[in-house]
Length: 168
Image (cartoon, rainbow, N blue to C red):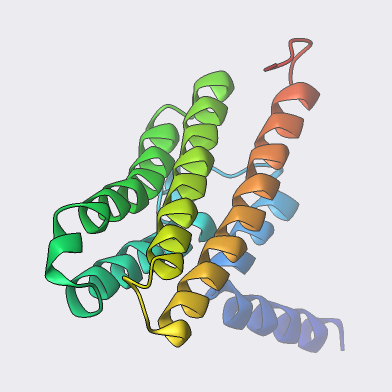
């Protein structure tokens, strides 16, 4: 009976292990930390959402904006959205220093705010007329903003629990 229970438990873990988020939780539960072997800048969900944002912004600027906006706000919103993703990646590369990691994640969050501001301006000035695309991208920005905030908070709390220093 114990062997059967053990096999079923292992099977459940294998099925759930395919999910990246569960994989991180699994490592945290069983090893107490994420190891270098299972870490990648692509693992955090914030990177995946930021990649979706970059693609959505790029498509929107190419397909929906008037020609004159391609080189003005269109260019700026593409750069600010790419800055979100790039700062998540660069921060990950500096994760050995929690202070630097938090710094780059904070810059990513600021770039996200900039991206939202550009999007709202495009919509208010009627350069972007498609309300469905506007709403979809704003919701993606809001989702990323919430998750990025919580991720920064988790990194900060992890840093504080492993050190007497504070990153502030």
